[in-house]
Amino acid sequence: MAKLLKAKPLADEAGGLIKTQVQEWKEVGIAPAIAVLMVNGDPASAAYANAKGRLAGKLGIGFELLTFEQNVTEAELLREIQRLNGDDSIHGILIELPLPAGLDSSRLAAALDPLKDIDGITPANKLACMMNEPGLRPATPQSCIRLIEAAGIPLSGKHVVVVGRGETVGRPLMQMLLHLNATVTVCHSRTADLARMIKAADVLVTAAGRLNLITPEMVHTGLTLIDAGINVNQDGSGIAGDAAPETADHVAASSPVPGGVGTLTTTILFENVLHALKLQQDAGRLQI
Ligand code: NAP
Image 1 (spheres, rainbow, N blue to C red):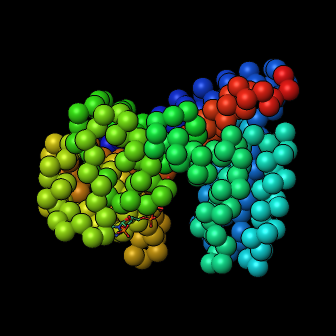
Image 2: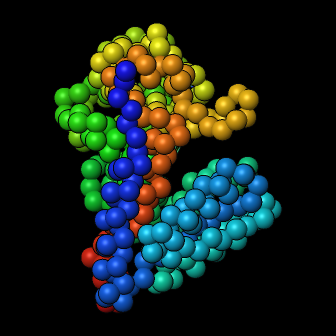
């Protein structure tokens, strides 16, 4: 039976450390707080934003949810981002994605203050990720790496296959893994023989958003499988990852969905808030 890589113990442990640090910031007169911008219309976005709000409350972090009607203009959102960039009581800003068609998420991301960009989506933080320089890294790839390391796998020298080259997960993850000295193969929708790539891997991270993309025939018993995919089950009954459920019985270890990457991602987002505070302090922007 494969080992199940549950994220909750890791999230609980990280949450405890965050709480302590939040308290330390409060003792020097800084109340850590974030703002989330969300455009109405996507039920999943609303669920994710509310989950962030609940966790912020548990961790003692201030949380402001700013919701906009679907007909909001890009100019209005840009104005709001500028306001939050200049608001000293807000230390992290997040744009809940996806946005409705007609709103350019790259332009909005580029307007964020890089020191408040807690999901690492600004050009400055993307460059820092690519160059392995200080900056804020996206939470989901960090969560994938944390799960691999918690499985007791030293990444240096390991062959990691990443399925998906998306901006949120696959692409930044590839860069972060390279900086950890893994050998990385990135696969995507045009990869000719996905199964052949996976057979040669020590670790598989799948972030494609395709239900049942990974099947038992494609994996092997020495493989660690990290499933970052989030898909709605065919019958609409909850969520599942990219790997078919029976795949977990044919690998050495695997992370479940739900209860895996996503569970840890939100906590890591709040670690990023603390990291953002440190960067703001180093830049002389906090009144302590
Ligand atoms: P994305 O930008 O849509 O990228 C999806 C990637 O998957 C693309 O590179 C695509 O290839 C590839 N792909 C699609 N079908 C494929 C196939 N049949 N074989 C191989 N590759 C295939 O998505 P994303 O934003 O990176 O997100 C990826 C997944 O992670 C989604 O399920 C998303 O919900 C999930 N996610 C999870 C978390 C979490 O916390 N757990 C957070 C964020 C996102 P092409 O480039 O060739 O099109």
